[in-house]
Length: 489
Image 1 (cartoon, rainbow, N blue to C red):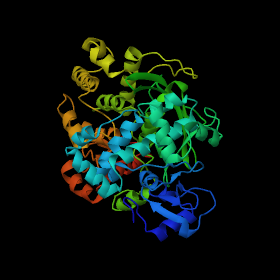
Image 2: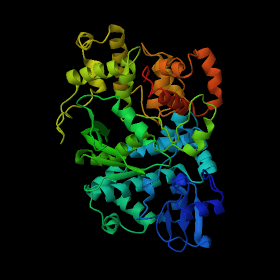
Image 3: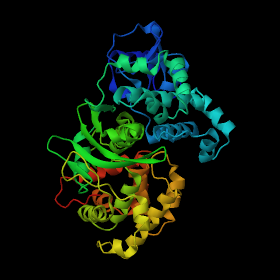
Image 4: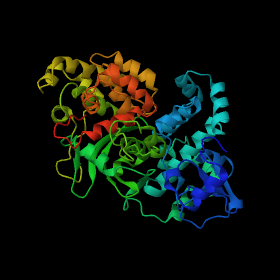
């Protein structure tokens, strides 16, 4: 059985026969008769068992000489959740590389090793041992799959696709593409026969997925002029993304369909499509594996809703600001304060929708604002100090707020900031860092759902829910939704 793959070959073939979406992204199948590798949900003609080779991830399939299927599109498969990445340094390194590739960066192996606190030699060794490929092979696969998506889903010129996917030159991009996929980027774009910009992108998940709860969570926390939901099920928002040192502005629109999220992206954000997709997958928790999570929560004192996900965030700084504003106030009050920040410090942005016309304030905008200007919005002085300290840390680069950031180090840096206590840090771990085992024991909603248990009592109880305590928190919060006396976060 190859690294990361949860099934033996016979079980994997049965999952392929039934197109079992629970294993989408958990393994890939290479077909020796065609030289192509597919997702288990692929709807092409079922290959013969003797022609199938099974791999734990796309990089292993490509290293074995298989090229990605143009129909099921392996670059669309759900990724690994935070719990998977935490199992080993190799997987943590893989997440760091994947995050950097999505951002169009070219991380060096020494830099990745330093982030993990190990030597470059050890990084290479554990990658080979746990993932079966080298860090360079993993990075090349991620770049090429991102490039494949850009070629299929955008109209970016091929030179821009090469740059956006992290290749230093068009020559290197063409050579890597030809070596792995045995056709040119232009030939692949012609072969897909798609019409970029007309159909929404599809971002699949592993079922079940509680769509209603996710959309209700987002709708209950509206941010005027930045976010908006409509009666047709679309949720839209403005967005700023830094890509190759340049800040791009635009909008996204998403809807949760029966088996995938539909995503539309403003043309201005097309060069940063990898980052946008990564952020949306985090926001909607699309990489979670309910088959592993839900059974572990059986001892919860509330009914477990199948497929309930942990809402992440589209922008780590913005969500941290909203968490700080939410200290000791209701969700509605925090939304009001956040809207005042947007009105006062958010940059204007034109979108196709009236009323959706501002960006959330940048870290620099809040860091450079006078405390008095922020205070006039009704934000108490201690909270103003916390917001500006947070903004300065993010703007200076000393604090990174995204799922690939090291959890322990990031939480330690957060706790050094004024106004950041245990509750704020745990909410950051849960929503910003995508840590599956966060547990804000002092949260009012958690306390109420557990019948008034204090932290000293609930923390020992919560040990039974490791390493999925973040999902336990969501189940506890969800149990309050239909109660008139609900306390939500």
